Amino acid sequence: MYRNVRVIPKQLLEQLYVEKQWSVREVAEYFQCSVDTIMRRMKAYDIERRPLKKDINMVHVQALYESGKWSLHSLAKRYDVSITTMASRMKEYGLACQRSTKNVAIDPVRICRAYKSGNTSDSIARMYGISRWKVHHVLRHMGMCTTLKVKPSRKVDEMAYLYIHHHMSTDDIGLAYGIRGSTVAMYLREQGIEIRSNILELDENRIKNLRAQGYGVAKIAQMMGCSASAVRKRLAMKKYISP
Image 1 (cartoon, rainbow, N blue to C red):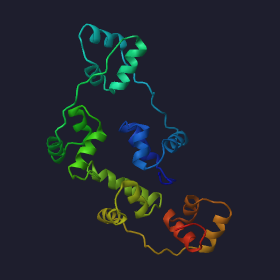
Image 2 (cartoon, rainbow, N blue to C red):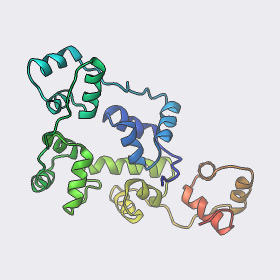
Image 3 (cartoon, one colour):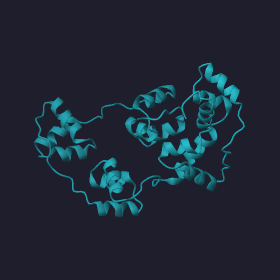
Image 4 (cartoon, rainbow, N blue to C red):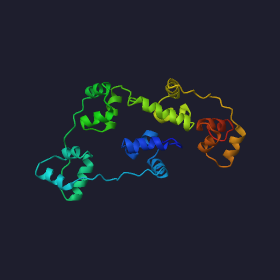
């Protein structure tokens, strides 16, 4: 079940989708929300979506397949698409093809060794011709933690941005990154960021009135200058929402 994500910074969304070329589904999994939520944010931020279909020169594909005797697996790897996508394009173009039965050899020990040496999951995936998620699966199966492995300083910068500019609590940020709130607080302190007190002096009557007027938790938090979790706690104390 997805958590209710109210704040998705434009800067972070552009970085993941535009600069890093992540797919919409990968971005949604990163924020632990639905694809529809990401699509709505992209529309609100005027972030243009990439074409769904990758441009593939089918004349060249036909020559490689018929004259060069390339396999479906080799063609998919050559054009950096999945085997299913390549098979579908060839079928649309009128080329009869059989799905490759070639198995990709995966050596978990070598994958772990490459990861420990500083290679990213993306680079390892390209080396072995497998997906990034398969690399993460292998690493987790081998007992290796991949959280915050890639560019931790960039991750901490993102956390600081959410904490300072969007008033998200350390618990909410930790939920988004799959770590404990106390770990987030530790990272922020190391960057010289003062952690807000857990007990804020908030006008609970105003929070109650805003809620009664139909305002959502995120909007109330924005108006009160605090985190959404702080508002939820006050409302739970007043029995306006479940804790």
